[in-house]
Length: 542
Image 1 (spheres, rainbow, N blue to C red):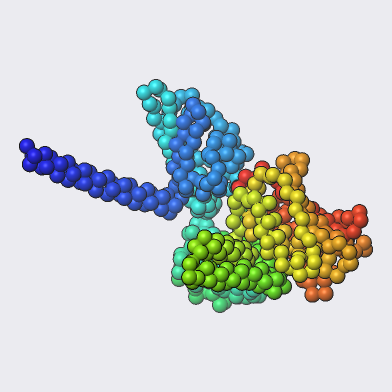
Image 2 (cartoon, rainbow, N blue to C red; image 1 turned 30 degrees about the vertical axis):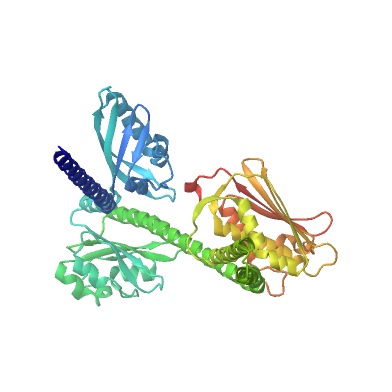
C-alpha cells in the first residue's frame, strides 16, 4: 500500500508540473499574441473597441486612443467620441449610434474627426453586435484611420474629372531656391524623382518658374516652350506635352510651393480647368500653411524648453558654492559619526548602543546628501515635460532644502506657512524651476539690506478651484518706474542677470493654466504670487 501511495504522489506531482508548464507556455503565447496584435493595429492604423449600448461603457485599444488623440488616462465614453466628431458629421454619428443601440444590429459607416490642432481625419467604423443570455447587446468593432486613402482618392477623383489630367505638388525648401517632391500619385515615379530638388528660376519649367515669379505659368507645348529647355529631355520620354502651374503662396506673399496640371497633349486650360487649378492651389496652400504652423509651434516649444534648461543650469551654477556646502555638511557629519562609531566599537568593552546610534546618524546624513544631489540632478534634466500629479508643498520644501545654505550665508531666515493642499497636474521639474527662481530672486534682493531679512513662503487654497503660492521677502522691493517690466524678456535689475528667469517662470505657470504676478509690500520688500488650477485633466495640458 505504501508503495502505491508514493506512486500516486509522484504521478500527481508530475501532472501538476506538466499543467503548470502548459499554463506558463499559454500565458507567454497570449502575451506574444497581444504584442503582435498591438503592433499590427499600429502599422495598419486600425484600433479596436467594445461598446455596451445599455450602460454606455466603452473599451478602447491603444491604437484607438492614438487615432482619437486622447491620453491613455482618459476613460472612453460616447461624449469623448462626439467631442472629436466633425460638426458636419455629428448628426450622422449620433443617428447611427442611436439606431444601433435600439436595433442591436451591425453597423458600418465612415465619418470625419476634427482634431484639436484643426486637422481633419477620416475614419471607417465597423461593428458586430453580440447578445448575451439576458438579451443585452454589446458591439465589438474596429475604427480605421483612412485619412491617407481619402487624400489619394480625392486627388485621383479630381484628376478623373478632367480626362487625361496628371497632378503634382512641389514644396519650396526653406532656402527659397530648391523645390522638393510633395505629391504626384499619377505621374511616373522616375519623372518625379528627376525633378526633385530642381532650382527655381526664370527658366525652370512651369513649376520652378511659377514659384520664382510668384504667378501662374501656362505652358501649352513643353517641347517648344523655352521655359522647358533644361527639362525637356526629362518630360519627353513620359509623353508629357503641356503643364500649367500655379504658385502656392502664403498670406504674406511668400512662395510655399506649386500645384501643376499635366497633359499628354498640347493644350491650353479651359475656364473650368482654370478655376479647378485655382481651387486646388488654394486648398494646397491652406494645408501647407497649417503644416508649417504646426512645425513652427513645435520648434518654438522646443526653443522654450531649451531656454528654460539653460536658465536652470545658470541658476544652479550661481548656487554651486551653496550646494557644495549643502552636500558637504551631511558628508562631514557622516565622517564624524563614523569615527565615533569606531571609537565605541574599539573600546575594551564596546558600547554597541552608542555605536548603533552613531551608525543611524551616518545613514541619516548620507540619505540627506543623496537627496540634495537627486534634487539637483532633476533640475539639470533636459527633456520633454512629464505631466503627473504634483504636491506643491513638497516642491516648496525641496527648494528650501536646496537654498538653505545660501539663505544662512546671508543671515536670512526662512519661514513657511503651508496649508493642506490637493495635488495639481503638472511638470514637477518646471514647477521646481519657478519656485527656485522666485526664492533665489528674493534672497538676492535681501543680501545687502539692513535690518530683518526674512523669506516667507505661503500656500493656500484659493477660490475657483485654484491654489495660491506666495513668496514674500523684506528686500529692496520693486523699482517703481520698472515694476511693469520685470516679466519682460531680457529685462533685469541684476548686474549679471540674464533677464529671462521671471519671463520663463511666467510662461511655465501660464502653460499650467495659472497666473504669476508681483506686488510691492506695504512695509518693505516684494511679494510674488502664483496660482495653479487644481482640477486639470492630463489631456488638457500643453
